[in-house]
Image (tube, rainbow, N blue to C red; front, side):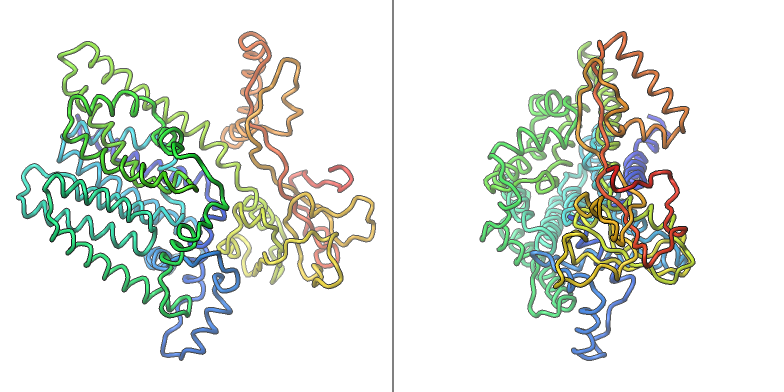
Length: 580
């Protein structure tokens, strides 16, 4: 394989991670503890202990968001601190840089570095074809590429665990002592990540430790040494840093989260899934390409059993044990996806290296598997990515308001509803790059619609704009209302099947159609509509699958505080309340 082709394959991972970042720059509520913590560190700095305990506490309580809006459990500040430290030099170079995009890019590139290191380790351990097939399979998976730059509580530990897994891969020329030291380092890293960031990594660590002991790559003493070292480093770091940021000593955030979610069972309030959910639903969706788990992994277990078992057994064991917890989300088991993908790559690599010995192997390795990668990547970039981009009405509404509001005003205040906060509105958006010296402040403490307020609640007239859901709209017959609707934003509303005779224009917008128009202009929209109508008329007999959009959030102007000219958001979408 030429060096150029190898370079292109290795470049695919970081390129796709950045593509997903640029296509979907906003965040959701699950990411807000991390992204808002990074914002506060960059915006307000870290107070020096020399200021005194009272001054430090006052700084945090008045400036930092986690004091004003604490979550159900504390989350470690070590991740945000690392991201802010890496991003800070770029902020010094360009004060107007999009900081949220910068921070997410730092996280995404860190994740891509871990994935590429893992691929290099596979290449050394099992040969170049395995490393290349791993990169192709991994790049075509939507969830890993899309969430690699997202500041979820699982993303940074995912990168650390992937780097640790790279150290567990065998090296052909390594001595037993070197292999043992690499295993110890990997176990220490997993311990650190579990202690600081995610407690579920304790199970991931346990299954890998047990397998290494059974394979006699380490001994009990090595395990204890690695565990003590990892526990000492992780616990010292998290207690020291987080006790300071939360002004509560001693504080171990992940222990608090573990007690809340597992011991007290509070995580079940977010939903309960059956035992088989991870194996029957989450893992196939994460791997995405059906050939990986229906053909390649079984082939690896048949033809290359020892390497395949070393990759599969600890990961499947981790998923099986974790399945006993009632609340399940795919991100809780994402750490097992690189080794499972690697096992599929081992199977595909075997077919490739033995393609001359069997027509079936040749067909699979030269035609079917490459086509499956292309099809899976296409599905990832269309069926998965396009609807995901349309899932952030809060960020889109706030950005639309900031881009078209009066930039000459020194201060603009906005009241945000729950949905706006949950779907993209973050503290980083209080520094829009295009509005000169305008200062934006957001308030998210009040979730009662304007027309349902009682006299005991402070007046919303203090705000220039509101961004809220349908129940925030003023009554159509209320002539004395101080609020006027000036714009609205739409979001993905599921999947719908158009039947014969139904007009596509009646669904209120289509994700695919709008995305094509955004990229190619109205000519592209017209071409899509023509193609759709032809296929409906001559191929599908009138049926057509659409991804509809519906209005989710509205921007309301305070008529007493903001002149009409400054509030005309210009896209022709202003609506009278009576028409909605």
